Length: 84
Image 1: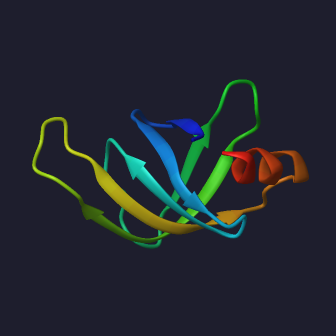
Image 2 (image 1 turned 180 degrees about the vertical axis):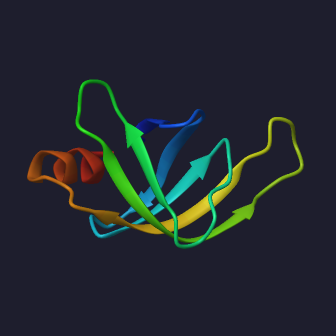
Image 3 (image 1 turned 90 degrees about the horizontal axis):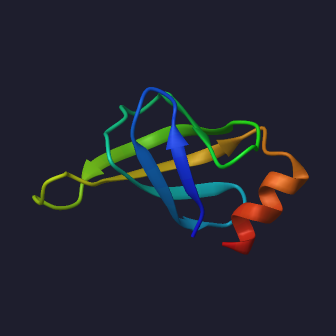
């Protein structure tokens, strides 16, 4: 599972992806319509256009399920996302 460091703080793990759409489990929420930027190692930013966000549990720290779609993935990034 690919782990992303989110710009502005926090982390997100790719839970599901078909190369076009994505489900992230994140440490912070993001409102629908926003664009999240995450980084994995030395890669360029992974952009996600957020379609929906909801809290998935009441534990601390909270976790959020973010549904969205990838924006401008390179071939290498898409392969890395699909690889898991």
